[in-house]
Image (cartoon, rainbow, N blue to C red; front, top):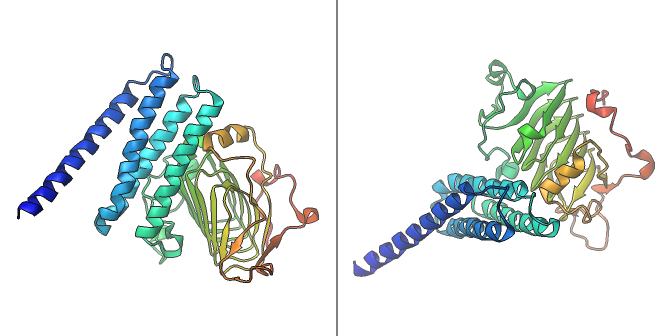
Amino acid sequence: MNEKNAVLERLSRRDAQRLDKLHKAHKAREEVDACNENEEYFSGAFKIKSEYIEDLLAQVPTLDIKTLPSHFDNIKKELNELQKYVITSALFLKEFNMRKYLGIVQNLQTQCYELEDRYIPRKKFGFTRKKLPKSETHKQSSVDETDVGKTENKWDEKLFGFDSKENVILALENDELFQRDVTLRNLKSCTISLKGVLGTLHMTDLDNCIILSGPVTSSVFLDKCTNCKIVVACQQLRMHTSTKCDIYLHVTSKGIVEDCTEVRTAPYNLEYDDLEKHFNMSSLDRKCNNWDQLDDFNWLAPDVPSPNWSILEPSKRVTDWSEQWSKIPSKS
């Protein structure tokens, strides 16, 4: 009994220390004034906040699986706040240091998603887990509730994106997109414009669609997509059970395909007014692009190229997407 009490006391003391760190982090953030703040002050506040997130990540193996979804949601919220803190401090941060701090945030984000994949196995990439409120703008009005009730695959009201649309042009801007998890599902012959910085992008059951996306801070997941053209920049790409898709890609790690056929890749070539700004905000490295180095989980021969994906010939690539922003894809 004494040993049990000692363990409980240590756990209580550790939780108290973490709460104290959280209090200090929030207090430091509230006191920030971008007009008179300096790098030394910022560095201290950033250290407190990032160490708190590291503590949250360290707790994952010790928690009950039922509490993990809300725990990961909290970590992602803290990461988004930390990233926004870095970006809003650009007035006094040197470019080199800003990239350094954004790199630290990105590493923490990677740890978060890797732990989430390990401790909460995703079903078909688990694209529905993230809980985020829907945008109230008319552009995002993604689904008619009466229509949803008639389908087996119901739209979760806490997701953000577009669902069950056909032959329409859909658009979201950065004020709605910034660091959010975006879901595109059950779309046919649609053009989707995403001009901004996304947190993650999930695409499921898309047919004959064009997706024009700004940079995605972390991962892009595709599942059951057919005959689509996808232009996207991201840290990680995961593609599953898809066919006849052209991916114009910027990816800083190696993309992964599984159970896919007739996938073709080309370098990311999208252009729009704020793209450079959005790349800087995303912390993606523009100099590192592994668009032509996909790993096929269904092809294990190391010296023979996978027959399931290939590089799109330059003569067959779309070189200018300007007309596609406002154009519904032609019938396949």
